[in-house]
Image (cartoon, rainbow, N blue to C red):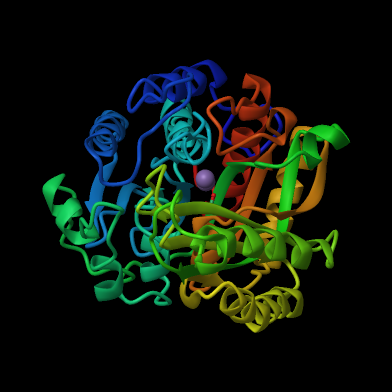
Length: 416
Ligand code: HGY
Ligand code: MN
Ligand code: MN
């Protein structure tokens, strides 16, 4: 059995049970999850993952951003490990599979190797990256960004959530600030399994996405400031309505993205209106524009056009316009050898597959800066994600994890 052939498969029932055991932690309001980073629910999910790793004989390390590294020894202890994982934190109205499939799929590989008594040359490290989502503490992929040396650790530590709580204070509060220097670990390769979070694989009838590239991202946080006044007694000509600035910029973002179809997307997901009172004209609107494209010139061009037009729109309303970059990464191209390993695994296992560009950002996008990296994707129902109704089939989870397993094993090398 200790050969990398199509009979080597993971235990899909065990994987599926673990995913749904994890889903009980930080439940949402409609069957999904709200296990936001550094909350008590995140801490509970980490504790469960830690217990499962220890039961699988793994030794756990934690770095100063709270990222968890669970190591399975290899025959050559000096060989750089093959890392494999994703994230356990979720959106506030998240699904049960975004990130979780990648972490528990990686754990399932180790459980399967234990069952079969397989030893690899390189150690294997199952990884849970802190704060992939970036919804509580922007930017997204925060810990993997610090690990890759593209985000400063002090900057990360001082990011605050909507209640003004700092990342580092919350990390220490839940007891998951490790001792390891972030980024000190060197990798032979990194693999991440993730649901597609888009409609392509399901529409094309493919079981596996071989991810060659990812979209780049720009998060521009805008502040439009007008004047809070009585909605009843203030004449229309006197008003400086920040809400109109938000409305016009929302439309502008859509128009800019539509100019670059099919190679661009744009929306505003985060919106705070102040003082948000029914009978006060909005004084201030704070919101984040999310632009993405896999073509860098389009991505930067969209931001340039937005910043060229938005101040004038607001000035015409008697409002001021300020902005801040709260997240960005350029379109990543994943490692060709690792991508080929994923493609070979899908072929060896007989799964339908296609090359695909990841629409969503992932920790792999940053890790790709410091180690040979590739991703495996499986479909999700109607392409829906970042929604509690997110759904995948057990067969899709099984296929993705089998391909991940073969890609990791081919890279780590089976010695017995
Ligand atoms: O925003 C993203 O693309 C990721 O889901 N955090
Ligand atoms: Mn994710
Ligand atoms: Mn997500």
